[in-house]
Image 1 (tube, rainbow, N blue to C red):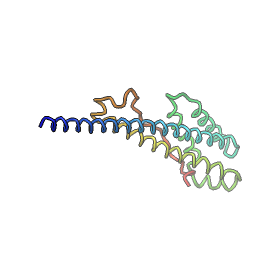
Image 2 (image 1 turned 90 degrees about the vertical axis):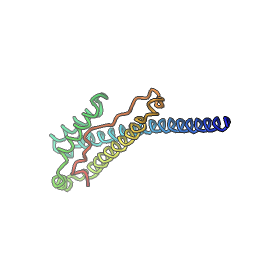
Image 3 (image 1 turned 30 degrees about the horizontal axis):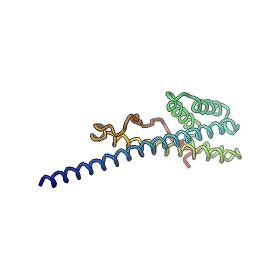
Image 4 (image 1 turned 120 degrees about the vertical axis):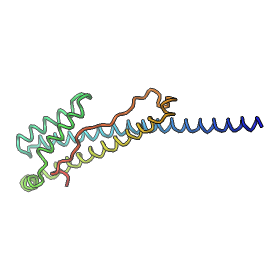
Length: 179
């Protein structure tokens, strides 16, 4: 009878060990996916600021809009990490202010020959930023949910990895570019 109890205890401990190992591996994979989604988001933000800067310096828009857009795009590219997302929100605000009226952009598209391609590229970049931010935040929420579980906290299955945080900034696509 004692061997039966020892066998049951050993089996339960084996199952617990397998579960903990699987959970630690899952947590590690989720952290890697968060890092990858962060890199994708950073690349998409650079692509958006490059498209905005290219449009602003191409001479296709009015001078005031071009100067403000070039300044915001340049700032978004060079600002430090602690102010990065505020600069990205500022770039979004500038893009929305200058490119939010579809009827004005339609008239401008008819007048300026090369504007279509530049606006389409910027619109695609803005949409990709919005998708990348949502995807990244979903990955972060998955890690946060798993790390909130009691066994993960008690046994420190996450090790010393910092808890990832969601990225919050305005990523609205200007109405004039959402076509």
